[in-house]
Length: 263
Image (cartoon, rainbow, N blue to C red; front, side, top):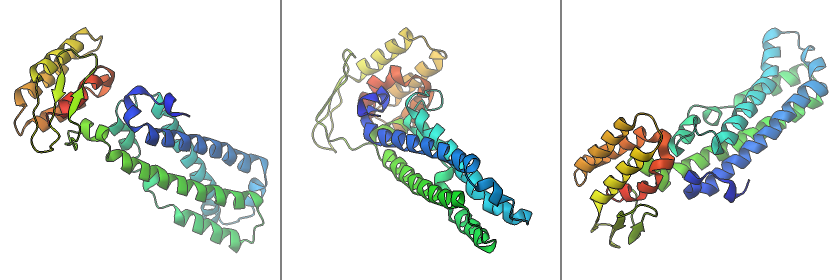
């Protein structure tokens, strides 16, 4: 996966997205390894040497949880780049992993399985390999978690959630949007924003031309932003707009930098 392959609306955070996609491919390979270890090696014949059902289940969790983790993480990560329905925004990418394997305390699973293995004095090559696989996946999960934290600090995430961004650029020009050039001074305190009426007019026109459902609700959110601009209520109006536009980011994305300059 190269940077050129990253979907267009995630270009701003392409390095982090590329990392997540690469980790997803790593989990996919490990998913195949789990299947091999269970079905092609000495796993099954050692499993039934454990007479106690509870101990057998504890020993078996190294496989069942490890395989489930690999399957979920590979599917969830690899689909970021093409599943627009599941991931219409960067925010939805981050939310997808809330409470998932990356937040789980997995160490007891490994420790308890090893205790059972030692108790029954099993000499199982597949189990040893599974322990290594499981620990590798734990490490990858933490990399995913730290990468998602980096994405939360990105301007794109902040824009989607109505969080003010640090404006250090003196000029923001929105390409292919007539009359929507936003001029901002180099100071983060004193800013001059021009052409705001043109921004909202062009955004309304883009929505009218688009082949999408629920246009009126989206246009109402634009009207609310226009009404609230320059007031303390603009941030909340902007957040409602981004929520309404979550499934239509390809249409509104050219306007996001201009709108964020008004926060």
